[in-house]
Image (cartoon, rainbow, N blue to C red):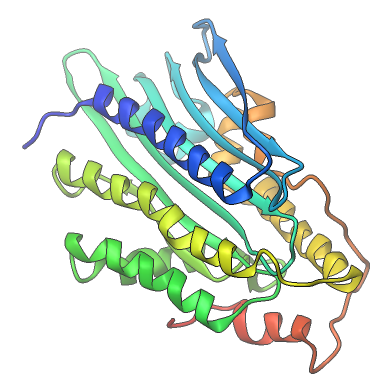
Length: 305
């Protein structure tokens, strides 16, 4: 079994943040990411630090963030040990890159990605570790070909790791990014996985490298294709309404958001994923036969792309 190298993981994650930011800045052509580096002295609850990078007011992206964080703790929060009692009494480290991009143009989908590593250690005992992550796409005015291309990239990067990986992690994504109170998926999915440690360490590490680097390979061609599409106030208002679903999911169901807030994490960095503008409308109903209706009828459910 290969040795666990958490320092190599941290180095990769920081380089991944740099690479993704450079590619997104190039795609936007105007805005740049502004970095807010932060550090927290070790306390009874949490220590560590990170680099929060936020882009605002771009030609393509209204707002987005690409965060790297590496947090440490002397003990797990009670909410975590209730589900994983084997973590009780262990110090832990959690590190990852997490990003969300909210475009200006409603024809360009919102996108999300993250890759992360967790390790809990106790003197005299073997460490408990796993990787997690994935990426998913949230279109407002979807194009069938864009959805197929997104999933084709996901499937191709999974292929070297086993024939079953794409199907399993695609289905996991469909289940995870689901709003039960709306009975709809958040978007058209992609990949999602957690607790990845059933392969040896290096293979697991190689997989999150592929997922992390695959995000821009899947997303940027769609951005380039749709960023100059003409739109009006109707499309903009629908985009803002659908952004409300993003807020609902992140604040009610997202495990990363909940873990960060419950463990005393840095609030500004955790809530970086929120869109700059969103709206809610009482009892909103789409008009039959419209592009907005097509989103609900044809896309907000698990599909074989």
